[in-house]
Length: 335
Ligand code: NAI
Ligand code: MG
Image (cartoon, rainbow, N blue to C red; front, side):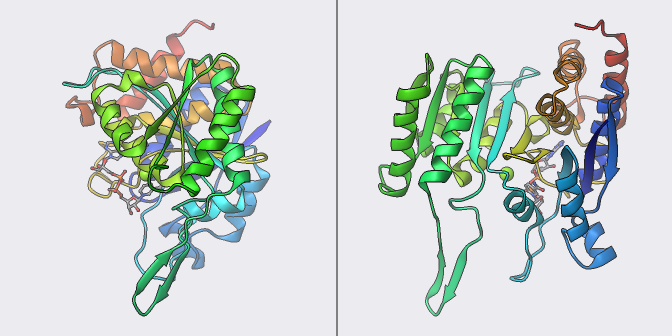
């Protein structure tokens, strides 16, 4: 039996993870769930936001399902998300965004952002001096090659039509230029039948809003992917709709793309869809695609039959959403 490490975290993290776990359980009996502390709860118990025991459990399980953490101010804070991404070598951040419910004044979106997750402007490598702070932003050949390769493999395996490389090589000529050159080379040699295109990150953000159908798979550097995936989520109705997977050669951690949302925490109104779809991505990743497909179906049936979560102006909070999805799952014929 495969084991899943469950990391609820802070804010709405525990609320949406609880829904996701019960829905994953509704789709398969083949998993064992092992809870672990991260964030504030961990700090209060053992004085660390990511205790060594948690990291060890994440390593020993087949995958992890994580909620979110609330960042803490102060120079000595070691962000747990950055740390587990690094320790577990989770170099690829897979962020699919698909319209499930029509959003006023927005065109439908179906985009998969493949974000480099291990280097670039997201490693908190900052050096203070008298005049200010220098942030080191490193782009490597190895890092670029493996993320572009991941995007190509993903696009081919999932029947996508093309990949757009999003960058800022008109200004960051050496670093982003390296990334783009590797993209060109790999698409030429291994992108069999996939359309290759390139776009600067600023205009890509605008185009995601105005013409999302221009994109299929996007491969991009760390910080650009962080920002663009929230833009894409906004087109689909908000952060409650955006799941993500942190994937490496040995380990993986699936999580909603959103944070701990302190503004709505404890009110029972968080949309669990992002966490639930992250659970489905996890099932796909660990070899349970039938159960993953059943969850995706149950979620899209919920919205297509006219139900709305509170973030979309509807009446379904986390609890009633989860009840509906579980009912949809139970009613489903197997594929
Ligand atoms: P956020 O993603 O937590 O929230 C942004 C906005 O989206 C808020 O208005 C929130 O209510 C809404 N929202 C988010 N998830 C939702 C859901 N499931 N259903 C309905 N509405 C939802 O981002 P914010 O406010 O910038 O950050 C809050 C905290 O989360 C910060 O401490 C930040 O550092 C942390 N954070 C943690 C992440 C992680 O654990 N991976 C990722 C992003 C932020
Ligand atoms: Mg983000």
